[in-house]
Amino acid sequence: MPRLNVEVIDESGGLLETRPDSCLVEKLYIYRSVAGRRLDMPNYVWSMD
Image (cartoon, rainbow, N blue to C red; front, side, top):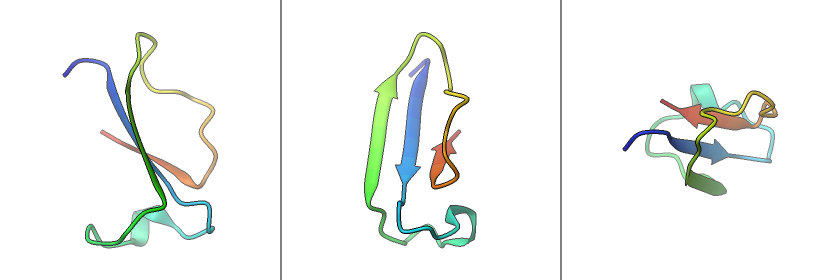
């Protein structure tokens, strides 16, 4: 789907890049955007491509 953004959010402070794919997450946001990816993401937000 074009312009679909998926963000994994873990406010506990862990590094999202080092976690296995089967790890549970606190929040998952899926939304469509006409502007594309947001550029102001904090370090606890991981954007899926």
